[in-house]
Image (tube, rainbow, N blue to C red; front, side, top):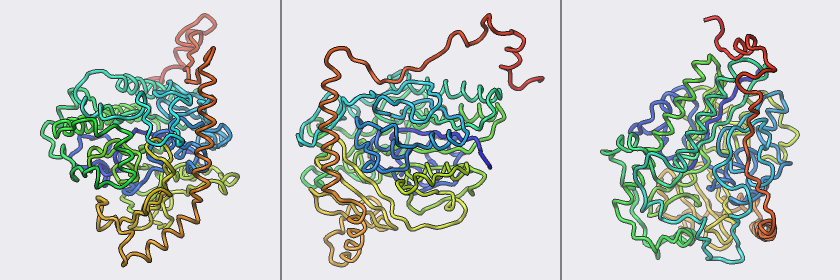
Length: 502
């Protein structure tokens, strides 16, 4: 059995349209460009759900939110759902996480044998939306446009402090793996929170984009009254109409976002250099959970099926897959079966309940015509939304709204809804049938409401009296670190050195 080491690098809220074939030429991202040159690059890769926790649970499990129950950023990820960490660990891998995965619930490992950092977001039910109260804003945790008006330069922030720590622990772990104390193959997941808002960047990276030609959105702001219903709901959820967003705000927010891609590139470069210096080889996956609209159409953040929000970069550098560009639409739920395929790990026990399929054949010249499915049932929605990307078409459906159909070849900015155009009724009929065969929207809505109502009861109960948080507490055994008196100094120093004898 071939069991390669696996390094997964995940970033947060990275817009996939900036990766037409690896990073766009104008991005200052030399390490990602170098990685792209040796990777299978998936140009049209989509999140399973354009929000952090649902996207990550789907990525780890190969299941859409309607199956795994992680509908929003406060929905519990059940311990009984196998993840790629479980599959690989069961097959003999050591599995480790440094960084964010936004697990909600008392299980903060989900198959990882070791976790090096805490998470950046809370693990409890406090961020639960409530479909019983459409239009209600929960101001203390809902996005608002303060991230845009407050964009600028800072040398430290909550997010920078976190990602500095994530990179530090990841490089230390790679060095530790090189020492060979554990003969098992390894899977290390390194998950950063940038370039997620707030749009704040260190000056050294900010200055890289002072003369950038891409600081203005391609599509101008669309007037509120001309927006589709879901976009209006998102505007309201973000309190957008209470902010006066100027062109300068937009440019500064985008400049900071681009700068943070370069900040991440440096962190990724450190990790890849440590892998090289420690003379280890690994299959490398680079992916984001979802994208960011970055002011296109006047929209920000994620939570919609528009390309900026839903499309993500995905690159896989593996000796079993050829470098090159794949244009067939794929999904992040395909990554768990892909990892298991590359490691020759059997997923057959759970495949009947898993939506994903391996991407390895696409990296070997193969083809596929499976529709890409997306779901959204979190803040800013009043009922679940579903989407299919099938060939050149994107078809969106919600029980509250008129259907949407976009020709992604002719209309990449999704400005013309073809769902009511007579010439396209055959396509609408075909895609509606595929959508209805996959989703019962009434049941989906009922399941989400049941989950939300239960979580509100549990959250409010647990915040009364003594509160035991679920947030992950990294443990360090001080008595087993460096030199202690139950250790032989000579054996210790030799065993902790790599390489030896040089």
